[in-house]
Structure formats: C-alpha cells, structure tokens
Image 1 (cartoon, rainbow, N blue to C red):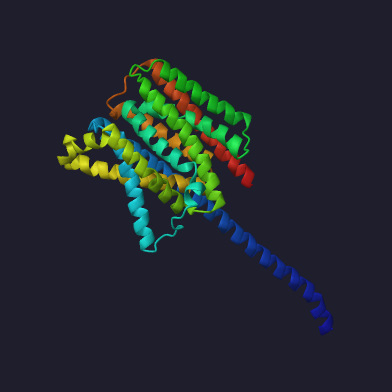
Image 2 (tube, rainbow, N blue to C red):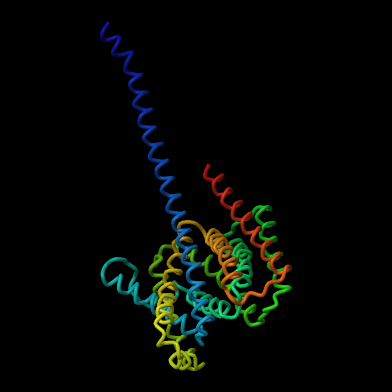
Length: 338
C-alpha cells in the first residue's frame, strides 16, 4: 500500500515542481520586461531633458548675449565631447576602440551629418524665435519616417501618416503668417531637419553593427570633424569674432557658454542612448514632445515671438498632431509587446 501511495504521489509532485519552475520563469520574464521598459523610459526622459536645456542655453548665448559665432559654439561642444570621453577612457571608466585607418570608413557618413546637424541647428536657433524653430522641427519626423522606410525597410500605419500630415499642415499655417520671417533661418532649419533624420537612422544602423559602440561613435564623430570645422572658422573670421567678443568678462555669459559646450556632449550622448534602447522614430517623438514645452515657453519668455491668431492656431494644430502621434506610436509599441 505504501508503495502504491508513493507511485500515486510521484506524478503530482512532478506537476507541482513544473508549475513552480514555470512560475519562476514567468516572474523573471515580467521583471525583465519591466526593467527594459524602465531603461527605455529613462533614456527617453534623459534625451528630452537634455534637448530642452540645450535649446534654452543656446538661445540665451546666441540671441540674448548676441555671441557672434554659432560655429565656435559648435567647436566648443566638439571639444567638450573629446575631452570628456578621452578622460573617461584614460581612467578606464568607459571603453571604445583605439584610432586606426579603418575608423573613418566605419564612421562614414556620420561625421558629416553630425557637424552639419550641429551647425545648422545652432544657426537656426540664432535666427528664429523659439515657437517657429520648434514647430518647423516637426518636419524632421516626416523625414525620419522616409529614411527609416528607405534604409531600415520600416512601414507605418495610416493613422501615423495622418497625424504627421496634421503636424506639417499646422507648421505651414504658422509659417504663412510668421511676422518675424527669416529666409536664412528657414533654410538652416530645413537643412537641420534633413540631417537630423538621416543622422538618427544611421546612428541606429551603426549601433546595431556594434563595431564602435556609442562612446566610439561620439568620440570619433567629434574628433574627425573638429579640425575641418576649426579651419573653416579661422578662414571665415569666426574665431577672430569670438575672441574679440566683449561678453567674456561677464561671468554669467561665461558659465552659460561652458554649459552650452558640455550640454552639446550630453545631448549627443542622450540621443545615442535613446536611439539604442528605443528607435530613431521614438527619439524624434521625444524631441517633438519636448518642443511643445519649448514652444509655449518661447511665446512667453523668448522675447522675439510676434503674436498673430493665424500663427498661434497653426502652432497649436501642429502641437495637437504631435500629441496624437506620440500616443498612437506608444500604444502601437505596447500592443506589439502584448
């Protein structure tokens, strides 16, 4: 009888042990999923905050203090990136491959996109009021979709296409009555949109290849392009104008200039993180949501926004499209995970 009872209990013990093992696996899976979501969320928030702060600081340096050279601000940001990453590598805090003749080929075309994106963004910030700067940046989302479709073979739903159309439509309405219209500013922001979209997609492609890593991409981007940019600044007279600028004795300006340089590195790092843990499109969405805050702050505190009802309505149509777009993309990602 005892043997019969033991035999009867053996299958039930096996089932219970299998259930306990599967429940442990499920628990670990849930913990892993929640950790992944937290990492993705933190990367997105970090990028949004960095992007917001650098726009405000750059606007103060270039417009409020009238610093004469956007190019020199860009050079300062490249130099800060090189110094910070090289020091961290020397202290064994981070690792990335040493320089060799294969690096430029592995990096192409990112350095060209990087410096073009940086300089055009700074020129655009200098010449446009913050609300128009941010609403015109919506075009980068459309271009990101185009580049992701061409290079990464992604497809997008009809609802996403409609919300992007709403953003672009609102931007056109706002631009049609922009009383502070600046042709050069519009050209620079258009170039910036193209380069931002292309850069985001290529960063994702390079990160997925895992040849240089995010620190290597950041370091060699800055290192490769700082010398041509310095040569351009010298021959264009930007270096001379920057050195002769009267505001260097103003401690508040000096602090903001250094902050702008450091924030340039932090912004590029946050873009890498957000793109690595999410996608190029998600990075564009976060930038878009950040721009909503910048738009309303710029209306009140920017000092160079000229109010008209048509412009204001266009801005808000674009903002509404941004919010709906962000919600659709977020819910689509959640449904895919489910």
